[in-house]
Amino acid sequence: RVNLGASSAVARANMPFPTDQRIHVALVLDPDQAQIALYLEGALVASAAMSGSLTQLRDVDNWIGRSHDAADPGLSASISELRIYDRALTAAELSTSQSAGSDPLFLE
Image (cartoon, rainbow, N blue to C red; front, side, top):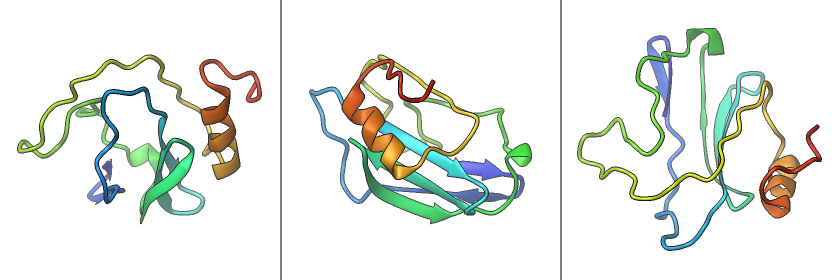
């Protein structure tokens, strides 16, 4: 979920994330294309329209492993790496990133 000003956008996969294994998860915010996209193991699993500007991003309640919905359980896992880029990566770049593993040099 992304909250931009008064609007929010949710990209929700139609299946649960795999358990008991390491997985590659990416959320792409692309204001130029007015969408958010969720990738799992380098493949697009959900997308949604997004309106507003990233300058309107409400950054007081950003969490990793916690939902905005109180009924959702918290994340019971560890996070081995977190990357934040200054642009929206393409589907091809995300697939390459997933295949390359930790610390890929292709984006430098």
